[in-house]
Amino acid sequence: MELESLHRRSAAENELNSVTAGFMALFHAGALAALFFFSWKALVISVFLWWISGSLGIGMGYHRLLTHSGYRTPKWVEYFLTTCATLALEGGPIFWVATHRIHHQNSDQQGDPHTPLDGKWWAHMGWILSGKSMHHDTTTLARYVPDLARDKFHVWITKYHYLPLTLLGIGLLALGGWRLVLWGIFLRTVIGLHCTWMVNSITHTWGSRRFLTRDRSTNNWWVAICTFGEGWHNNHHAHPVSARHGIAWYEVDMNWYGIWLLKKLGLARHVYRVKLSNLPALPPLSKPAPSLPLVPETPPVASSGD
Image (cartoon, rainbow, N blue to C red; front, side, top):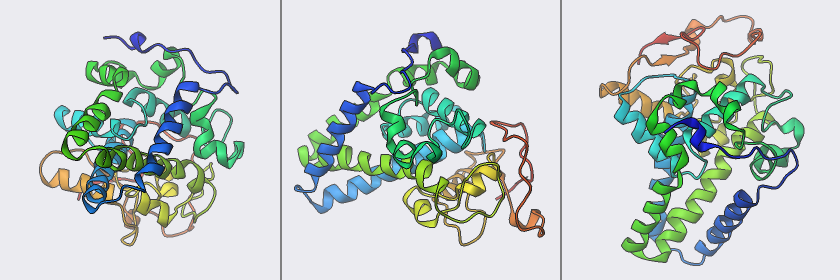
């Protein structure tokens, strides 16, 4: 299966993507309905699936492994984390990774798909509903994901990224009826989506800045909690290849703890991390780099270790 088999027409700048908008409306309606069918079983299952899709999938898989190569795993682990990410309803790996690499290349500048400089609503959700967002033509995508485009599994699951979520929904329906579907699919997915989108909107608007990067990225502790560690966004933009985003001891980073556990189990190698002790004490803000590498061979100030 070739990348060209994923071909889709690029959306116009102000064109509403009716399919995406329709699914977003459906899932938000289902999320509201779930509130009238509460059960502790449904809540526990939803929280577990939120961690599976948001932490194992988006944070550890799509972001730190596939996009930035902050660590390496055996292929079966990579494919497992990728499958977990598809449960978040954020598209397949090729579209997600390409969009995020484009974001890093043009962060808060012309060409950034979701900068708050184009409006906070646009940065949070508007970019998904209209414009190019993740709907670039395959020629554009191929320039940013040559590594994934060569992998038959990533090409296949990008085309059929809805299958794992569909199968999960059928399983939940069989296990506990529509109550589990409403909580484990609709409400859980909507919460996960908004948490991810907060990284685009809130952590480029409000928070603290440890590093003077060429964008407006910030560290935001409560976004970090909601996203299992992705809210330490200024740290990440300053050192994009680091598998650890919460680089201070008090910066809780659940995604990093998962990667650390994989390393201890012998399932992760070449784990790059930034240590505060290796960074210059003065000045408190580092000088902005001329460009942020997408997937560099070796990170800037980084070391391998636990």
